Amino acid sequence: MCLAIPAEVVELRDGDNAVVDLAGVRKLISLALVDGVAVGDYVIVHVGYALNKLDAQEAAKTLALFTELGQLDDAATVH
Image 1 (cartoon, one colour):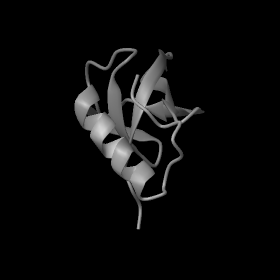
Image 2 (image 1 turned 30 degrees about the horizontal axis):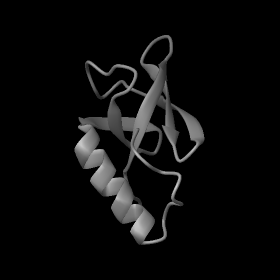
Image 3 (image 1 turned 135 degrees about the horizontal axis):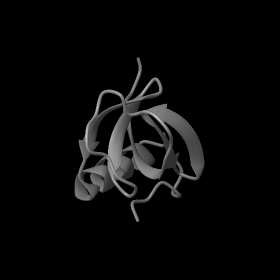
Image 4 (image 1 turned 90 degrees about the horizontal axis):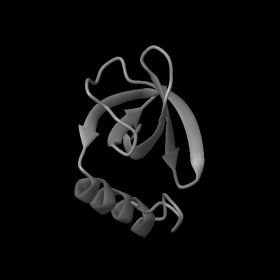
């Protein structure tokens, strides 16, 4: 089973690329499927692509659930 995980956009790059942060892990992803993403936004990431934007409250709830289930450590908090 594959999961799509909320991640915070920390840097926009050339083209449709961005760097996201999830619990201290930074990853280069594609924003080709989502319009209007800015630094500080949360996106749902699956296999290197942002699938859609997510508000900070929903991201916090989802990350808390992943942490509770032991899938993320406590560092995965919404800022």
